[in-house]
Amino acid sequence: MLEDADKRWLRQELGKRVRFDEPMLQHTYFRIGGPADAWVEPQNASQLKVILEWAQKKDIPYLMIGGGSNLLVRDGGIRGLVIHLGRMSAGVEWVQKGETVIVSAGAGIPTRHICTLALKHGWLGMNFALGIPGTLGGAIIMNAGTAHGCMADVIEKVMVMTSSGEQIEVQRQSLDYRYRRLRLPTALSGTATASAVLMAAHISLKPGDRDEIRDQARQWMQGRARKQPSWQPSAGCFFKNPSDVQPAGRLIDEAGLKGYTVGDAQVSPKHGNFIINRGKASAADVLAVAARVREAVKDRFDIDLEPEVRIVGEEKTGA
Ligand code: EPU
Image 1 (cartoon, rainbow, N blue to C red):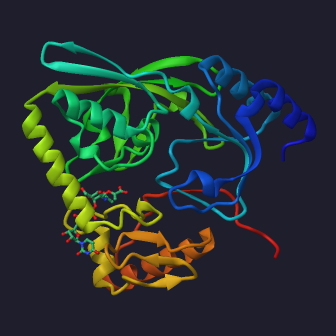
Image 2 (cartoon, rainbow, N blue to C red; image 1 turned 30 degrees about the vertical axis):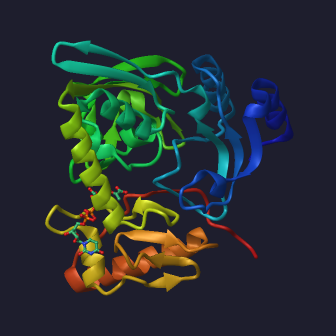
Image 3 (tube, rainbow, N blue to C red; image 1 turned 90 degrees about the vertical axis):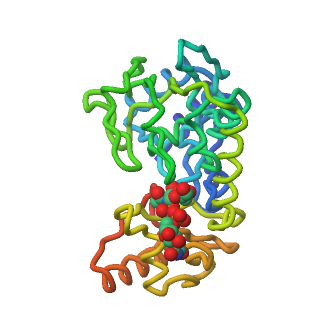
């Protein structure tokens, strides 16, 4: 897909901030994924703008990724550019206005940094996200959440760069938050292969009692550690919960699928909604496990499970 002239242009523009045929397993929590044609880490907004304009002009697809925590990359890898904003994360700033603390942060900042900051200052609102891996940008786009809340609860506004390089602020009332998904206004969102890029966000928190917030954090973190296979490579919960009263983990458990294995991919014996990589699992192994899980839950409960994990890239062809 990328021609030599494209590679030369990217190298000239980005220097060491572009790598070709980059194994995506190095960038996903699953530790799975074929090569990306080019892995691109712009250092600032103007460099990002130049790259987006070039990609549009050349009709080269690009995909934004955050921390790779909720991502399954197929074994054939990704054609075009994979853009990661981790290198351009601006610092985190905050300002208190009456009973509200507004925290502004770049999309490439790890979500845990905001959680830690809130704990340090005794701000209410971010504890729900403790233990959610990945970047703030990824968490916002996925409307990441737990039983205790989700990103939609705390977002004040987001700053996006459209696929034509224009920087726009979108206030919370114009954001269409769904379960584990954020939809930007249609006019801004672009297409699947050339989407708007989330650059930064303002988060709205409340001053609270620091000790109470810390106690709550400890309890919630302990709950997660008890229930989830946190130390094994995975993409977190693989399926969306069909409803609060029918969590996917319980349905999969009751369908008898815990421990079901294909290659090195396995339904976690600890939590039914985690598919874990026990070593050298391929994306095909994970997808085979997921297909069996869906089939079993459909047969037993007549419920269609929908992946929460974002699945991208091409299947591997040939030997
Ligand atoms: N359950 C079972 N068997 C299992 C797993 C769960 O019976 O194997 C039961 C539990 O006993 C509980 C219910 O199912 O009664 C719900 O389980 P849990 O409390 O573990 O929560 P969850 O709904 O499975 C959600 C989020 C998690 C988040 C936790 C903690 C989704 C899809 N998952 O899990 O988020 O960490 O709450 O608040 O919303 C993620 O998004 O990647 C993720 C892991």
